Length: 157
Image (cartoon, rainbow, N blue to C red; front, side, top):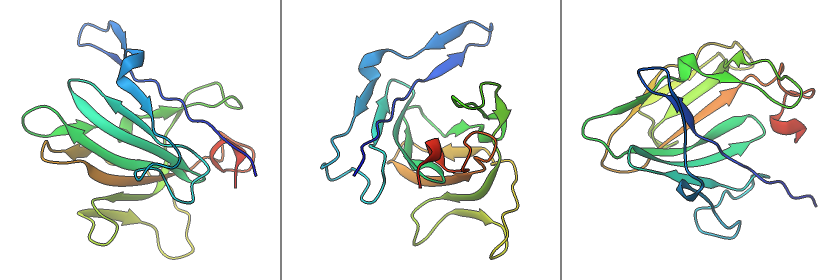
């Protein structure tokens, strides 16, 4: 059995272009045995919370998922279609491409986009918007072929 760890950084730029990085106190690692921890995942879950939004973040071999809640009035939208990724193998940022998107509970999603059965067609993830009421689950299956040699998150199956 092996163990993995997951670190999270939240960086942004304000409208003037000044970079901003979250404080360490806003990121909490969830214990592996907690009720919120991911059952079969090799990765622990991390929780990010500050004044604008809350994100219970997790990863699996195919991408990342879990739940986001806005802490602002109205909806808060994440422009996943503009996201870029890098890894220790691919140090140059590449546009994030996905082959599956789900927003809402797995049993009754409010948004579901995927290719035909057996097809691994990739596309830009759409922006996803989240409300204040509660944490809303989502999942993105990311094309990791340029980031990791076996196309799985940090080369773990």
